[in-house]
Image (cartoon, rainbow, N blue to C red; front, side, top):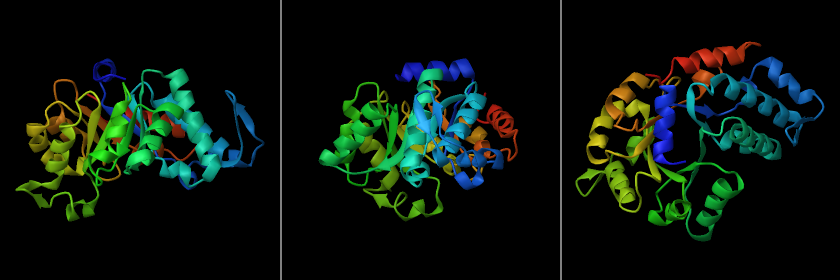
Length: 280
């Protein structure tokens, strides 16, 4: 997906919402968890049973309820890998379902990969060729070698961690390097090997006060902004300080949408929460 395609989706939906599909089986409504005890079922060619069936049903309901508002979905790989093969089958189904039913939506693999050489090549192939994501989150600690393989795929994106929303981010990300904070050095170095058409940066919503400063030296790239909702970040502040002429933001909310309701009306509650998040 191109930057122009993403901006067109933002304008059409009047939304910068990215829904984080961070599915915790224990937090799903009881009516969905119970499906894990049913016989395997055929989901558009995917035969799923156990937790895979329950997660697939949950994700399908959430996607159908929020797709009118969301411009992106972001499954966090840890929430699928922890259930082994069942979780990965549910992830594969979820990606296929979104691609087949909502093809204009941007898909992010929140995998936070950060290796080099053949390993990075295989990670890029896994997420872009095998699973057909549009973007992957990447930890840049090992330098450009950990990012370049992801930039070799036309129409795909690397999303580099820059200034994250967790409290201990200050241990490294705001440390000084050559008279500037490390997150700025990371962003500027990554900008030198990429374009705004194939790289985004993670900037946490809890750091909204820094968005204007980052925009001053990174005017054109999209930012993926986690931390809205359960972590206390404000979508309004993020849009005020971080938007650019092409939108420039994907504002993520996960728990605040996925678990907005705990009963049989969970999808309606998710839709209502999504309609009130990151829209303009």
